[in-house]
Amino acid sequence: MKFGIVVNEGPYQHQASDSAYLFAKAAIEKGHEVWRVFFYHDGVNNASRLTEPPQDDRHIVNRWAKLAEEHKVDLVVCVAAALRRGIKEENLAQGFRISGLGQLVESGIKCDRLVTFGD
Amino acid sequence: MSDAKKFMFVNRKAPYGTIYALESLEVVLITAAFDQDVSLAFLDDGVYQLKKGQQTKGIETKNFSPAYRALEDYDVEKLYVEKEAMDARGLTEEDFIVDVTVLSRAEMGKLMDEQDVVLSF
Amino acid sequence: MLHIINQSPLNSSTLDTCLNTASGGDILLIEDAVYAATKGNAAEAKLRAANGKFKVHVLMPDLEARGLGDRMMDGISAVDYGGFVELVANSKNCQSWL
Image (cartoon, rainbow over all chains, first blue to last red; front, top):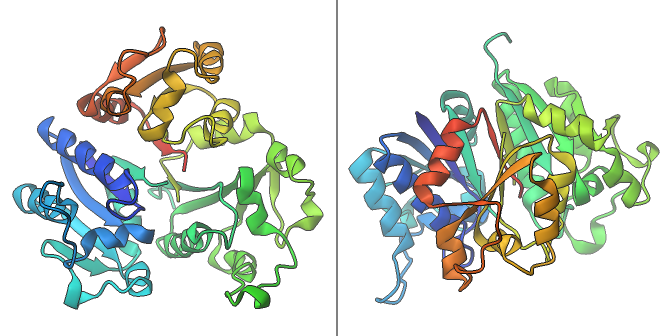
C-alpha cells in the first residue's frame, strides 16, 4: 500500500514528528511504500540544516534524511510555510526539497492513505 | 470529476490564536485547483473562523476571513457547520460571513465516513 | 473509518467531539491521548460507554513512555507502531482529530 504522511509540527517541541517517523519506519518494515512526507506549518522546521541537538538525543532532521535516502521517501517542505519561518534552500537539510502545496494535494490523490501528525 | 477524490478539510481551531486556520485555507484553495471534490467542515472552535465582522487592525494581523467568501469562485461550495458547536458558542447562521449548511453531529459523522481524504490542521 | 486522537481528554475536547460526532469505526489513542485509556481516568467511563460503537486501541509505546504501561483499562486493544500501520491500512479512510 502507498502511504502519504503530513507533519504539521516542528521537531523537539512536539511529538508529532517523532510519531510520524516511527509510523513511517513501521510502514516500510511491513513492506508498504511511504511515497511522500509533506512538512507543513511549523513542521517545516524539521528540514533545518542548522539543527544541532545534544549528542545523547535523537537527531530528528538527520533521521528523516536517512530514512528518505534508504527507502526513496520524498521529503517535501511547503514553500509558503517555509519562507514564513525562515527555511530556505541555503539552510535546507540534505534529503529534503522545497515545493508547493500542490505536492500535498497530490499525496492525497495518489496515495492509498494519507496520515496527518500534528497538534 | 468522476475520478476526483472526496477531500474534506476539518477545521476545529479558532483563527488568529494560532496559524492553523489560515494555512488550512491555503490548502483548500490549492486543492480546488486540482479539480477534486472539496468540502469544509467546521466543528468546535473552528466555527469562529466564519464569524462576520473580524477587525484585525488592532492586532496588526491580516484579516483572512474574506477569503471564505472567495471560495465560491473556486467552486468550493460545500461548507458544513456542526449545529451543536454553533449553538454552544452562541452563534447562528446569520453570524457567518458565508452561506453554510448546518448539520447535526450525526449527519456530520456520516459525511466524514464518505470521504477519501480527511485533512485536519 | 479510523479516528486518530492525540490530545489528553482532560485538557481538550477532542476525544469528546470524536465520540459525539463520528459514526463509528476504530479509535486509536496516541501521544497524550493515551491517558484516556488508563484505569481511573475520568475518560475511562466514556470509552467504556463508546465500546461497541467504536473499537478502541491505544499505542502502547506512548502509554509506556508515560509510566502507565500497567494501567491500561480493560476492553481495549494495545498496538505498537506496526499495529498502527495495520489499522490505517485496514480502514477505508482515516482522520487525525487535530
